Length: 265
Image (cartoon, rainbow, N blue to C red):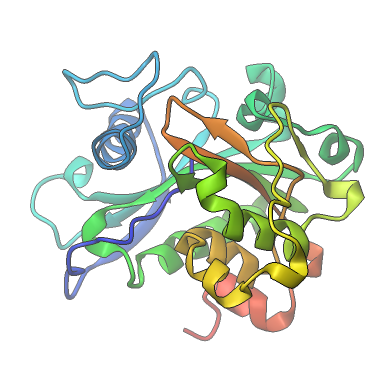
């Protein structure tokens, strides 16, 4: 589940970033250790396959996803100690083997499935607290952009999270997302345990204050032209309120493509 943190320590200087796909069990364990630090220790999440003794956040879908890793090779130790960012990536053919997309635990994806577009689900996005607010996320996105090109992906989607499980406390940012960034009907996923997002009328909404409450990762998706689905989903296991973010690669402007792919950087 994508996340972010607003109270991160200072980022490291002079990192040596490298992005690649996980190549085996050791790489996946390194990703799960990072996810444990972020989703369990920082955000208070849990789940049936969380291994507190080994400090691993895992689920049954891990074997079906590709795991995109960001490493800082300037860190001491082997590559398993250098994983500082991760994304899980699930194509439609992988989802078919898994029996579903992960997001289908929370959202009805009928519209996306009926679109006849090539789909890629994103999940479990996180970056080590020391690297937030810097270049790390952009390096992950460059790796993601390469994956999208290689597989001819048309639409990216996945659940993204607000911390906490009280939608009323998130009324302003959820309303902003609903009123200004709702996906078109042909791509509009709908929450299975539907929590209304239109909690404040447009003319009563302080848009600037509301946007300040939107997590940085969701803001980044919006800058890329992302949409949200219909309704939020409260995930008590992860202590989050989730929205489904959808990005149509055909709608990205040239400037947004440059941001996404790192072109010209």
